[in-house]
Picture 1 (cartoon, rainbow, N blue to C red):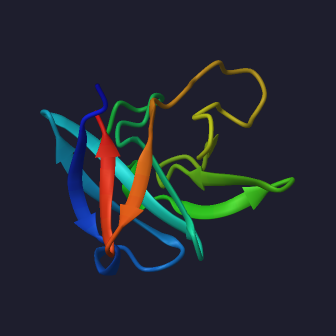
Picture 2 (cartoon, rainbow, N blue to C red):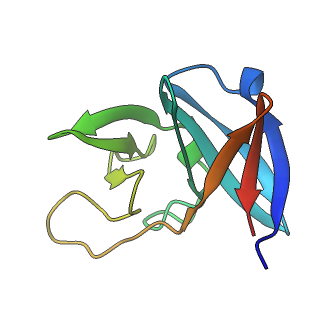
Amino acid sequence: MDNWIKVASINDCPLGSGINTLVNDQQVAIFHYGEDEWYAVQNLCPHEKQMVMSRGICGDQDGEPKVSCPLHKNNFSLKTGCHLGEGQDWKLKTYELKISENQVFLKT
């Protein structure tokens, strides 16, 4: 059975930015990437083990929505969580989101 929990209002996260929320004792970074594009990944940077991904810079790499870690600018796909650089196999956990009645819900 799918379990969806409300994690934010769409007004909490302006276009092109991220916010941090706590879900079942896990910090999750939520990003409003495009007009109707929302993504969620773990807030923990896999390189430095700091809770900073929600403060990363959104952009794209060859058309792939990405977030750059604010500490060392490592790029991660917002769709898959995969590291977009060479030489590292880091990966962010991703979460499924849906928008309903101006609210952001995360699948647990």
